[in-house]
Image (tube, rainbow, N blue to C red):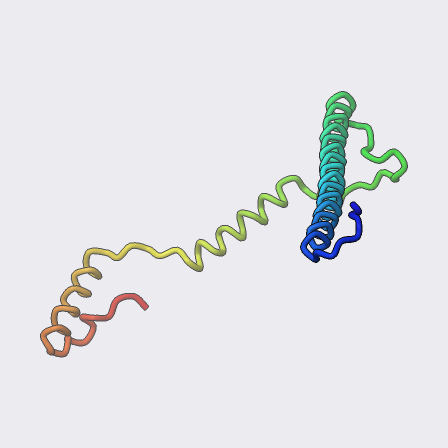
Length: 137
């Protein structure tokens, strides 16, 4: 954007600002177009991944014995060769271990009465009889 020579600095400043704004607008529109193209490419990539998953699922459904990667050698899994109940037995063992460690059993009525009596005596300032405040070990 050019202007003729002038003696007024305001005209020159206005011309410079106009050129700068035009350049800035051109740069921002170019960045917006680039970002839009990148997003479109990303969307196509996601669509291709979804399509590949659908094709793989269809292949597995139609021929479940076919290897996933035809170039990879077939290797038996160590879990597949183990007993099928081994994983469940391990899970049951871990569950039982934590149940034994953290599960609390309810207080019996005798234990509850002894605890209430000990609490009442403690509030009154008296010392409970030996064994009255003792619950479980």
